[in-house]
Image (cartoon, rainbow over all chains, first blue to last red; front, side):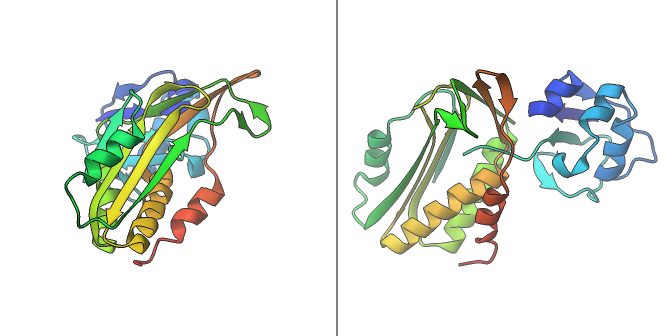
Length: 83
Length: 152
């Protein structure tokens, strides 16, 4: 699975993208975020407050109960601030 | 109906002329132009860098524009959003809507910028005397978008 990070999630974690092998027990966005926190202290710090971690699966905004699978492109980012 | 995501500046007059040229059914155009301010939260801002999510940005802006076309009778709609490094006074975004009557043009333009601010994947990094900081999303932007939650 391809994971993308934007804005301060990218700078805190230190990479813009990574490819991960998803454990079978990770089935939805919430499970994915919890699992990503275990990858490093930087991940744990960046993802600590899930109210400011928004998620897109295959380039569409989704809630935390949205399913995820190995072929998905998942992006994690703070609330958007364009315009 | 057009969406452009680009580093380059845009010419508001040229875009308006292109939108309306030869289309004499249009009775009014509403334009919103967003600019980089030199102050934010009481601090001087010397530059702003806009990051975005290439691919999703275009898809999201097209979806927002399609929603506006469903809600209002529009002859045309245009969204141009810049990314990269900008300085105070620089143009960030242009939203333009054209319709036979002003109400649809005004309302749809307002809707587009409100929805864009809460849905399009852009993030602003401000350069201040104390260093760089990511702009935080405002509750007031969520409130503004929520006003359009029900179809007009």
